Length: 141
Length: 381
Image 1: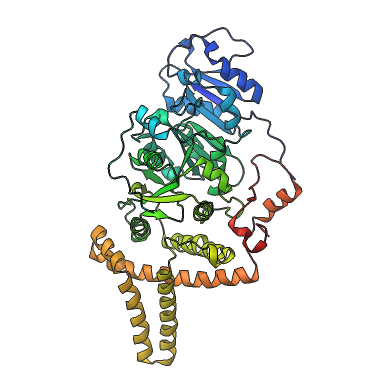
Image 2: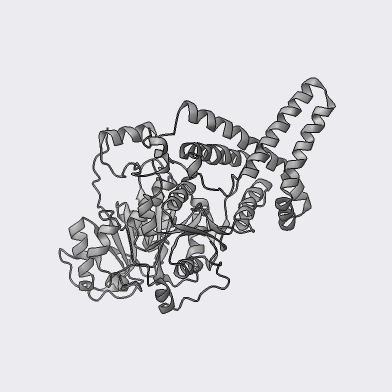
């Protein structure tokens, strides 16, 4: 017999606050909208004093942590809280910058990324200040 | 996050670590990756937990950017890596086994390999020469891998997924890992390399890309891995490919097969000697073994440099047994190929696919193209 369809969310995005105040959850609008659209859940790991805007339908699920909780403990709490099979962990400031409309369907396997630009790789590494290692292999063959 | 390549939230490199009940080494593996000297915004860490019953998920969850939990029984690293690729974002995919601790410069080196050679399809490295497990079997197996890969540095026609990277577009064009034929750790990486090579992609063994092998091998595990999961599937793959498509191999060169044949002949002669009591037959057997040892002096010298003369001498019987078991495995694989044909997936998986049932996790996928279709037969047939 085939297994029943999964009853848990398709995926989860765990937002790590690292104890910093969550002043505006509106910064996560893109994430929350994408989560709604694709059946994912958003968990905001925050200490009780982290603050934030009043809860609305679009608010992330808050997982209250005690002050001084380490990141590893916070992540473990998130794992225990979600039944999702695809779980992304991301810092609060980065979560606000990702274009989730593009990224979430990729993460959930709804869209397969078969190609990505490669031509600017050298420039990208130089822009990031990544030094070229000594003794790169020769261009044999 | 605007990535340097322009895509939203897109790193340059996706590091994909498949794990199945790997709690023993997973933490060290991921910590080594996180200690990499490549800026963190340039890469993402994806761990695929393939049905673990131990603490692998918890260990991965404490460190990874993305955790993919595959429920049910393990589907094998080919399947797990493919699911990791499906969920990842970067144009370059690096596969790292959960019992390998990469060096701090590994990620950076790999990116620069690709940056410096835009036509490169894949790059991989080797174990380093400092395996921590002190027992003879682990040292032998891990050091032998280092020796063979270091000697084969440069352009190559194969791939190694314990620490190997591939361009996403090449990976997609090749049809991903063959999760259909390889439901456990076998030669799924080698087979992918053959398909990449068949598509015309250039591959490189960069000897400076290294990782420390953390796994401890017992003699029994080593024999099973060498015979059941490497030699037998490799021979069956090569028989299915046909002579025109057989690329060279790092471990299964003509010289190595000759050594297996010599050790097999020596074993037969020794049995004859025991039965016939003809001393000359015994001497001939010893002569054949000496020829094999002589042809491996470079390897034994390397062992001596790393672990001393006594270790190098102790290893010789293990190495001869490796040749012997490979010879037997080749005979077995030849018989299986001619009697049974190419291997297929487990019956349960085949039944799911034939019925067209969809489920999470997705069932292993049959390749649209692939080496196993050589000679006109369909994969899994």
